[in-house]
Image (cartoon, helix red, strand yellow):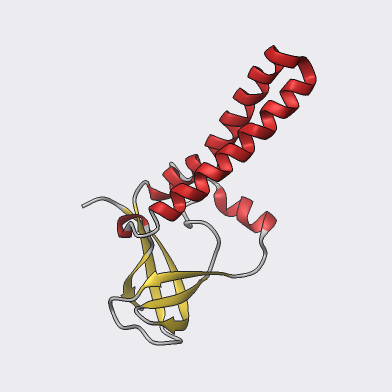
Length: 143
């Protein structure tokens, strides 16, 4: 079995077979461990309020329950690479190609096409893989 990333939270609402869980901290909580990305500091810099996530509720938890939520190993890294790495890479490539075609103006247009194109791709990919349960967070246990 692969290693999971877990975080503790509290159930705030229930909808059908899902629970809305408010987590205690941003990021995966592994910032200071070896291999941690340090993302918690970044999330705290931009978002000071608590975060809520919609997760599957196979254990029948109730509003107010403390739970441990997990996500499969590698999912966070893959998502971060897609959300940050792809737009950055495509924007730089678009600017480089645009520079060759029409100097500075071409670079700006190429970068704009690159970033917009990558964001459209990411949005479509997220919609098409929304049903992929292996990449979604889920409740591991009730605390």
